[in-house]
Length: 490
Image 1 (cartoon, one colour):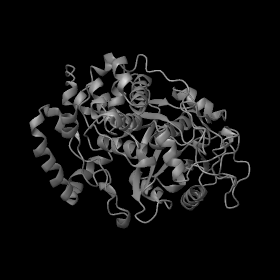
Image 2: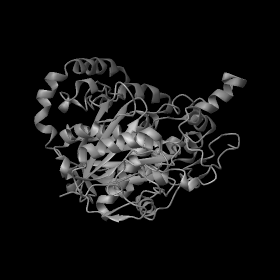
Image 3: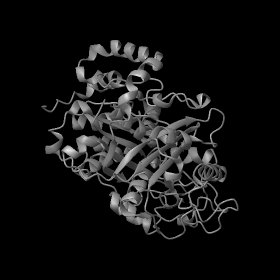
Image 4: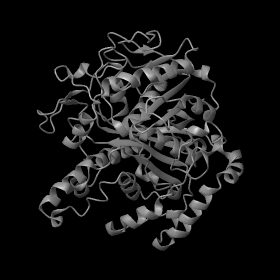
């Protein structure tokens, strides 16, 4: 199929509107009978035909159709059930932009070596803030990845997202030549952001103090969370499912699971998915300081993020992006792709009453057909907060504690918390554990909480681990809980 002409800038907002296929319960439909009180409204069903038409005038009938489908989830479940499990989803590429490197192997080797990416913030003067440390990316270049004209105007979250996305394609061997042979109506992008274009929006507010005439004409589209995915899809000419999900710190996992479901349901063959965030600006730091969530260990930045340690005093902010290439198994085999791992499934739950008592692990097992004994590695959400770490630990042990080989670690002990991108880079860490046979240490676990069994947690050095099934947790403010499962491809 010939490459499709990229629409003019003025058409973005129209295209963005007509390409959003939102519906309730789509991704969750094949286990909607579980925990009705935890039922979650998620974006992610929808037909991927909307954008294929290419005309602007046809968005309403599709919107009507999406709503009609949303109102009749029962009927659709019956039709769709047979082929959900037949299409297997594999990971064929990974891309990262992190405080510990911008390549999946460099990133993981730093994790294995126990290198901390936490340092003093240099981007702006934060001397008046009680927290002055973060997982700040010190060097980053968009050269060769983003057109210079766009790079100057875009928010960093979009630059991280597009760069990580294109690096994932390169890592997966999806060269431009090979991409031109793909059916682009069956390739999609689902990379989310928790905070979106904060800097662009902040700059618009500053400009508005002078006059609306000073505002950047791109300040609205470049601030919304969907536009990173949208621009990447336009750049690639991909016309499959294209949107973003924003569920605070669980963003990446929601995007990865919904992307996999598009492939499982036969709506796509290739999906770029994950998350990106760039919240390290004064309003971002100030906001998290204001809700008293952050560590104030400014004198010793590398020791500040210490999940499960009695001396932890809050999380440490980070920034970056993590993106996976998900591909339907036969599609990957046909092009001779290197398969890094298999995606088995996952789940979302909603607390509906409080944000720190997650139980999504059980539902993830139901979705993937995995027995709990099979899980021997958990990449925990563990952010280094007082209550969150312990609640999650209790849930993990209750669910998987009977496996004597169980290993649990927290990537955030070294990267800090990348907010919407956390699940993306942690999925990469889980896949790399599967590939290498090593799990990374838990940094700063010097004085573990009494209730924590140190036999379950990885120590201060990397450990050998033949991963059978890996589970990666992400929990977002507002009660968005998610668990996703990866396994070696057999």
